[in-house]
Length: 202
Image 1: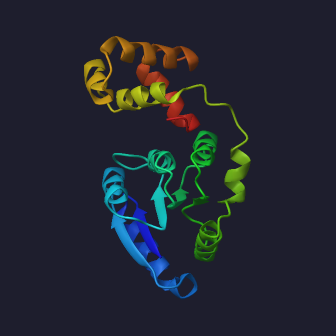
Image 2: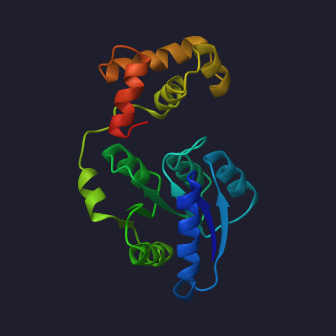
């Protein structure tokens, strides 16, 4: 089994790789490719085939959710398990929409992770019970276009920079951000990004 491990914290990534290697007796022979951010994970997914993507949710570059959505759009056979410290309702709902097979907390016992991998590879879905409860929350009011524009705005990009990154007109960016601000009852784009991040919608 070939696993792509995407985690930006070197210590956590190393610990996960060691755990997977130790658990390989029950997982059969495995090969692990480690990357430290979402953009490098995307490059690997585009150039190689993997049985499983084991990813953090918040990383530099692409997020674990964006990687999951891309795999879904490609109709990829790669299974996805997200490991996170964030049990936000918005994250979990989007993960389920994007076809993620497993959603676990990073501090879950090692046996739970190995068992989750087996279950997900068998086509089942595994969500940490604590996280499942938080999935019953508010409905995300943002659409994907508003979310992408707001995320770039939260990184400090100007309207023109966002427009060039998304290949759209500056006026369209302003419309997306205005809609997001209104939907979230925020005072400005930074406030809107803060609210969306707290809810797990960004």
